[in-house]
Length: 332
Image 1 (tube, rainbow, N blue to C red):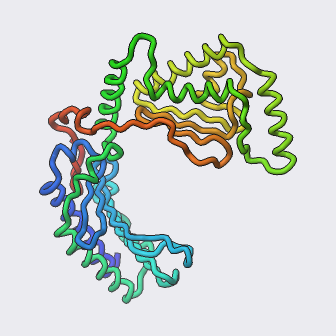
Image 2 (image 1 turned 45 degrees about the horizontal axis):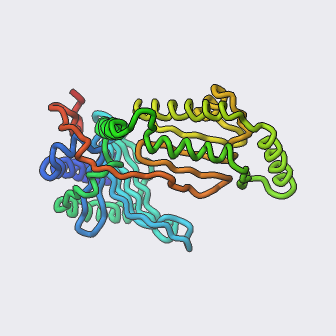
Image 3 (image 1 turned 30 degrees about the vertical axis):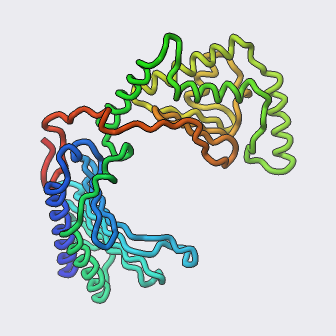
């Protein structure tokens, strides 16, 4: 590692240390235990994110935008990650209007080599960028409203919240009723499989597409399931999705030119022909949302969504829960 690179690497390490201090000083311990990323706002409007898990403790400050005219991203990005003990990585990207002027500085302290050697002018520009960022890091502010979101919950907290919500929804049901999120998903498939067949775009053009649609319509009309078969399909699909939700798992029901995965298994078990399902269709089911794309390259549609509070469904973190690890610090 040459002298210029060593100096830049040391400055990156100082930024990392200051970010850790900011987390200890500004971020409540309960947030450190519940959420996967810390988020800070710099005075110039940029956002700094820091990973709080044992496998992601990286810093990212990204200020890049896509330029249609240039057909490239333009802007800056700072990234620092302690990959493992005594093996940190620093990356600085400065993307300019001309690609030949871009700066891509990447270095690790284990092999003492630069990925790209920079000219003296490029080192000076990179150092000026790091110094400016460092001054902003010293005065950055924690942004709790961006941190305390459902999507930012870590794995343990997110799972506990999901299961608590499902138990609450289950307690509202009368005997024989189904969770609303599951019912919406299952009813959608029942409607598509028993109603008048609406052939969506299957990704085939011209005469080939026309003949394919015709043959699929013929198969759809000939393979009409019996009422008891559809009742069995509805029962098995409902039980399968519900079971997976209470195991903390989302469900994807997928059809390319034929059903696959969970949907295929349900169809086989219920003795219903796969020709009844709409092709080029994908449905994603989570505890609070159902989205579906029906047809080749069709836009996603949300057919069920319900918002829940965050804190209401979260237990107080147990004492001794993991916090952000500092450089060189090992998990206990």
